Image (cartoon, rainbow, N blue to C red; front, top):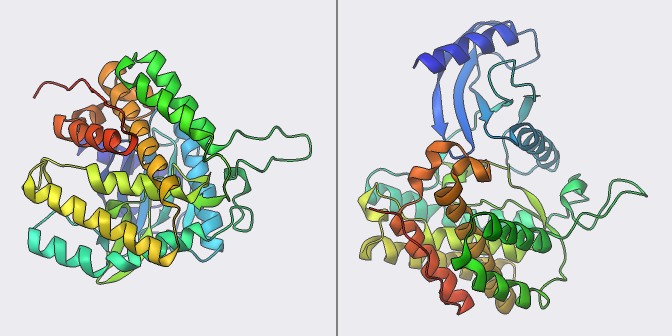
Length: 356
């Protein structure tokens, strides 16, 4: 509470306005999110007496993450894709304590509501088809046409600009660096497999990718999707990687609470059902190449294992997350993810597990 009060005071001074209803809305691996409204006109043009969001960015790349998300939201908003309206980005941590973005507070709550089982499943099921269709709609967008040319690795920033390496190459390079730095020797054979197989899937059309599209980042009001949040990892590249990332999250994201999302028969059955439904509905909406999808499902899970492995060996800060995020790297999450990656790649992955 003391921290929230300090942030409120500093933001009020920065904006030159009185604030109302200031509170912590959510806290994730990379950011802290506050909700507030303006009680009086601000020195900066912002809507008054309407719910707003203050999103803090943490870690050594905080300023670049915030700048990236701000630009992506501006572009997608202009393309009439359902995202919060971004009002202001401040990269200077001195202003309030961290780089921050002020944006619209969308109506609704996450698609997956972690309350009672019956209500959560009902909401999730009713809005699941729009969830899938919206993901396909995003992938139909051309990064250049949407004004997101910097996310497209095939496009430079001027005639003499160096071409950014393709997303697939950058993903493999990141995993390789983590395997060496961790060190994560247990992930070496899976990395070698991913490198060898990558030549078959290096050429593809480029789409706008969210790269963290899952039910906690999709807000719904009733059965209507009000918007998609958390665009820090947005990219341009092969849509199969974005589908595969969502598939891996749906298949492997176990939680201690609520109990029905743990690594148990109920939780595992729900994960299998919704992942199978997601892939089938997406394919019906926008056909997939299944050999390509399977490769990217393996790659996405190997990449996620490299992230969790670094959090265990080098701390969450080593991959740009808050130190508290390491507590979420649990045995069930690692076990589910390792089994999934091994099944997709057919490479055994003897991941070292943290103590219970």
